[in-house]
Length: 174
Image (cartoon, rainbow, N blue to C red; front, side, top):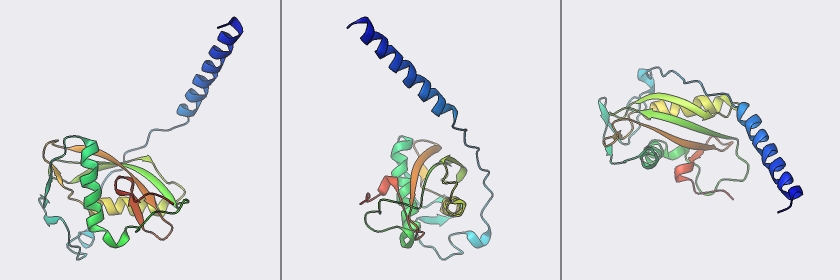
């Protein structure tokens, strides 16, 4: 390798590192959103929702997941079970109305204790509010029996019709 080639390599590496540093500095840490208890009128039982929820103490089932990544499928399945009529059927179109990445903290009984946006669809605040409401209303989730508590992450793929898919269970895009 000649001196000229080495210089070009190091210059390119330096420029790439500088660009990466600038891009990462532009990101602000998400602020945790406080959870207020759902109103009695928002409880799944009051809404006539049937699904995995049995009692006010916790979920009707527990999760055997051993990691947040494996719990993610249990959480997504739980949400799909309670929102079957709101799930987009088939492959999603190439352009979606909103995409959001959400962290959900679940305690040992399956209750949602915290929601944090990793990537919030700020151009669609109504979607953010609806996703948060949907997650809160789905509590209690399957109790993470082996984990004690869990923070899992999923990506919400939101269609303009108001229907959605979760990345964990998505049917893909056209």
